[in-house]
Image 1: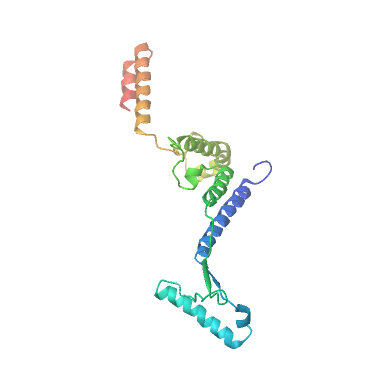
Image 2: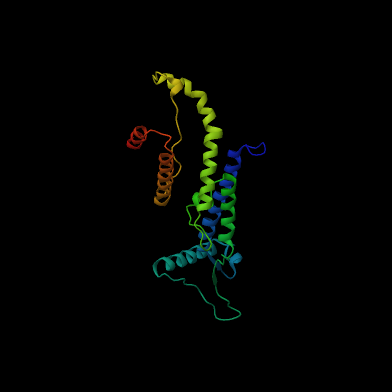
Length: 219
């Protein structure tokens, strides 16, 4: 819940807005391929069946020439008294559209709590940007949800599930979440160095018998 509202509904609305924006953009691309044909005396031609037939044949000829010749054939006219036909491509100003769509997707990412780079599958923007900070925040969010929301629910079912699985000592059964991320080689090396340093200090104190320490190291 987010301020009394269902988070699922908030995310659903943001996803719908993003989907509508994508649909609108696709329709805009399709519309950019349209031709705008200006035909003199069009209304007069539509006033008779012969004129309608002539108009249909003319439009069919334009479509056929574009398909066959990869060119648009039209009557250019002879002067002011005979302007001829006018064919224009549909003009669209594409500037600002990518930023507009990114803003909608970023809103969706903000509402869902998922980093923009992860939910959209894009590389981080900006100089020297790695996206590690966003990823770490995402793992923290997922981890908090696992421990504070999902675990309490599962713990209500654990007594039933554990006994149905035939466990002899249900009270001694415990579980952990699978790691959300795999540590890098550098992180594994640093962890190993810290562990070895701690073991060395523990041995130097002489608080543990050598036999117990050697057995622990072997296991």
